[in-house]
Image (cartoon, rainbow, N blue to C red; front, side, top):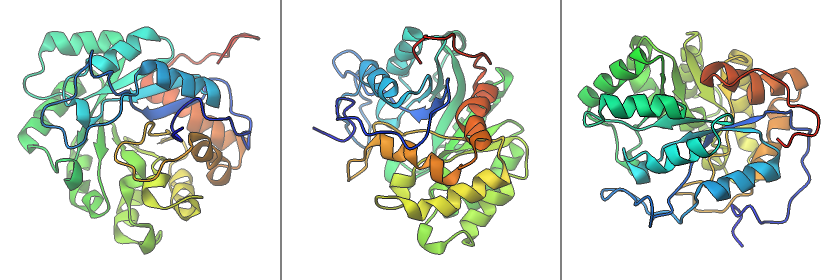
Length: 294
């Protein structure tokens, strides 16, 4: 049984997950027979449809999710949108768009719960996009009140910092900028990431520890702690389930447990897991009625 299979025997959590905690970075893949993968994709994942993701969130006690379009589906957002429509009060989405995306499609995404668009700048996943397409997409998203999500790696943070500052819209940096942990928190790319967080429009996800280092992922903790300290009200957390292109399987409960290490204070965990995603994604601020499942 794979580590990302929600049927894996549950491991006891290290802390009490607050009600309405959000997995702010996760994906759905397929099923391919219904939602085919993009012809020009760089990888072909195993199907992990919405039902598998929902089962994982029930096991972890997570009440909300932001489903992020992955590059294997390209700009065909149907699988992600289908997942949003199946749980409209508990999910939001981040789409991938290009010049061929129609205004009608954008309105449909808005109605379904999409609140941002994503672009990848990592060479192994296809490299930087056409910057004309990027800026035109940003203009369209900005008009809808959406934000930009950018997947960068290491010194890509430094190269793209001027562009990020000039976008004039909220920007979310995925996976702690995927900086090299060997360089430490004084590494130039990480210092540039911290500097970006001086801008109140810029957010960062304290996810991707499994991409920075090996289990038990403690090498990632100083980076997550520094980012949370720099911008406690603009940090998010996510599983990155089902971990596309990850060589070694990982158990999501282990990743969730890391939150107790880089956010030991309950107030910080409330911001990270509940309040911050509610602010950025427009989830209602309410308490679950007694007895209602997460």
